[in-house]
Image (cartoon, rainbow, N blue to C red; front, side):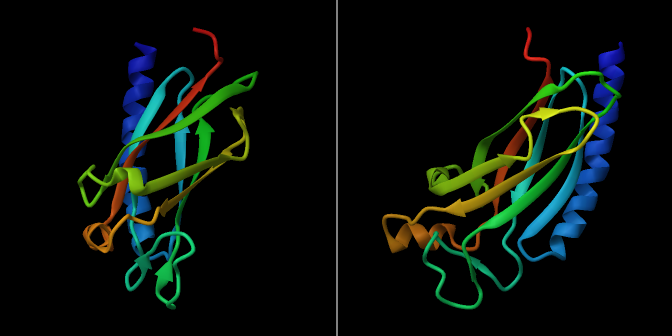
Length: 164
């Protein structure tokens, strides 16, 4: 019963946080920050959108030659644990279901790098930085299909004591 209540609270927080993050994201350059509250022993999954700022073009690494070219979109998250705990919990962050413009055909051209300020979470927030870049496609035809497309993916956050 307790886990169900925590799960419902997490979903409610996620919905409010997603709307707030999206509004903030719309007004930012290429970096957004969101606070995520994770319950002990639960995996929280959320959809993320690496949206290129208005007037900018996401280009492969090393290919930025114009003022409006950017080589990365950065997402940051502050991960908190939902309850007071007495020991560190392992924090695992993963990404899957990568789509470019809603299509997985060229998802292998997306590079997502996840950096954590700590591998464990306790009563202090952990900063997660996700850097999204694209790899140079093999042809201009492929590049024209992915240029200026939003990149979406699922992020999973898991805080546990590492014992099953």
